[in-house]
Length: 252
Ligand SMILES: N[C@@H](CCC(=O)N[C@@H](CS)C(=O)NCC(=O)O)C(=O)O
Image: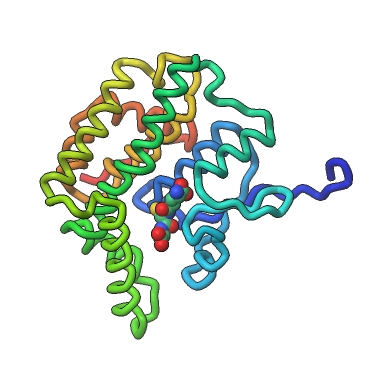
């Protein structure tokens, strides 16, 4: 009890472990990375296919129940709120220009590279067959076919509305490869972005998005290109060990 208020541990609503990663969603991994790096206590809440999305006030995962009971959606807004309320600034070692560059790179991962990965999982093959078998296997046999078609249609429409889904397959992957190449060049030979001593927010973001491309058993031109960027793959495993204790066995 602090100042007469009962404080609960933060409850992190996410999908749950997949492919040796803490979650199949980079946004859920991002938040968990932040909680672990900032050493904030939290409880993961198991995904309930019937209830979780209904409770998510923005209709997306992840969301948290903060220690005062507030429901907060959107991975970036969650991290901003937790940082603000705890007086934390993981980007403290960065100067103003580095903060601006880091901001632009984080947006590239959230708002562009993510959609290329969505394409590889929900539209392209063999990604879709793998995702269908994994995400929809637990649904009742009676509703599974309709739920599967509806979910894929929703993702395809979202990709079109966002814009990436209007390009050809080759164009989509070429766009994604430019993102991971830029990220790799930005990192260079450093342990963490910007050659600082501890991970900053961009390191936590990069870990989440690179993990979701290189670790799952979903081959694609994006995965091939990212796996060839050895500094980025080493950075992902470095962060994985720092935050989760051991490296991930990446799928062959
Ligand atoms: N801007 C949101 C994006 C979250 C997001 O897109 N989550 C996906 C899973 S990776 C989701 O819940 N999608 C369900 C849907 O769009 O219906 C964030 O940063 O949290």
